[in-house]
Length: 172
Ligand SMILES: [Zn+2]
Ligand SMILES: [Zn+2]
Image (cartoon, rainbow, N blue to C red; front, side, top):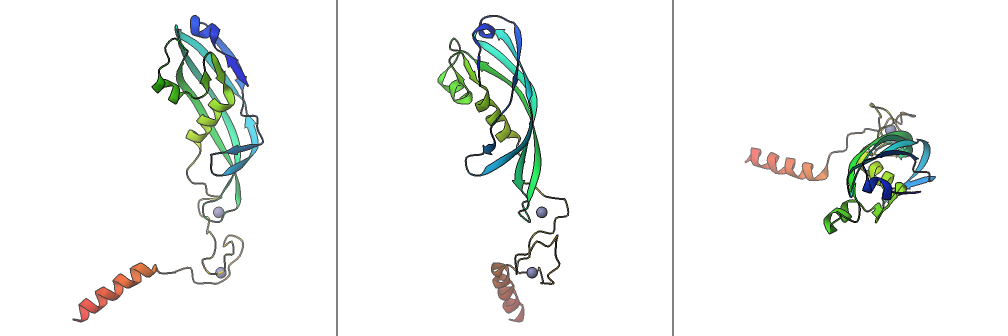
């Protein structure tokens, strides 16, 4: 969806547009996430001065992400908050253009804007629950679902080598 900004770029009026991501799959450029649900964003578009516009609004998208420990799917709410200034052709510079790839001349690409906001708002790490036990380092089973009985302490081989050196020194 696109919104023409000509009117707000030339006067200090305010207008509203209901915008949403609207696609079934979101990608961060590396991974793909199914979109579970979405609450649309009421975008407020205000002309600040000639050539400069303030965008504000809040929306929420729920993405199917993976638990960082056990890799099960977790429906993850990603609320995003839009609060930024964009510039029309009168004021745009090369530097500004790089920061607002979702504005082309007088036209705002809302999907591109929301994509940018979701990328900023996405959690770095998702857990299915705070005390997720993860997967067994020996057999790969989900330890939340089963207790396979394997010892989960696997010493780091590099640490083991250092420990050997310490042991030798202490003997000398
Ligand atoms: Zn988990
Ligand atoms: Zn196991």
